[in-house]
Length: 365
Image 1 (tube, rainbow, N blue to C red):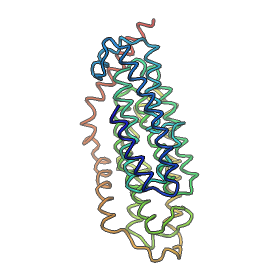
Image 2: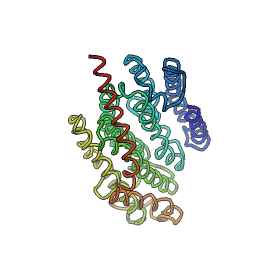
Image 3: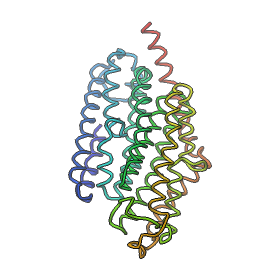
């Protein structure tokens, strides 16, 4: 919990000092939102300490004695923890800090925010909610992870399509793609949980590429209005090619990493939540829609005369993008490189939740 809180401080100062014109507003909003969630996590943690079989903060011991807590107590603590972690994901309706924070943050900080920070929420749910409160997880996940995750997927994609700011569009696409992680966790199948954690990693690499690419064009043009560009492919062919690759990766095209993780999530969740999967799968059309429409407006068509002197991708910029692109390709072809590391522990965690939930249901009857 202490390190969870410490993580807030550098992000607050990095956005607040080096951010855009509304940096103070974005930094304070981010800080207050996350602090609210942290208070709930603290209260839940103290509840687990005082009402446990023995007073301890040891996660392994809390997990071993989870049956000691009444199901009503588990539900209350689970919801408190979920809200704390959901703010970080960010899950609907706790997501409104994210577009502001991303738009105002410098490029490097947007990469850290998308690549690392958003994953803290789903990591916390797996590490604490699932491990320590398995019975409540099984009962509540369909609503809080499944339904809200599906809303995230559809709502995030629709908001992304409506944006005129290039960076804001990528920020909303993050909300949409993190919805797949939540849906995978709600499935309680091996494919769903593996797909969810793989999606956490894949989203980090692809969105990091996208934010770096936005930063490249902002450095040259000093604005991010999608409709203010046009025809950049003629002036910056290498940059356009790399952007096209990142956009296709974001769409989840076969042969790229996001395809594997999203398909695993959808296949895993189909067994338990087919209606949610139908919405999630259909949103792939919206995702392709907003990315291709953005690509057309910025890179295709006649060149905007204002940008006829823009330099193409520099070596320094390519040096940051190429390793991410290689990871996206390798995991698209050989996802077992990560799935092999994840599978054993995640399947065990899934079995713990399923077996404990069976015992809890038997006790209730």
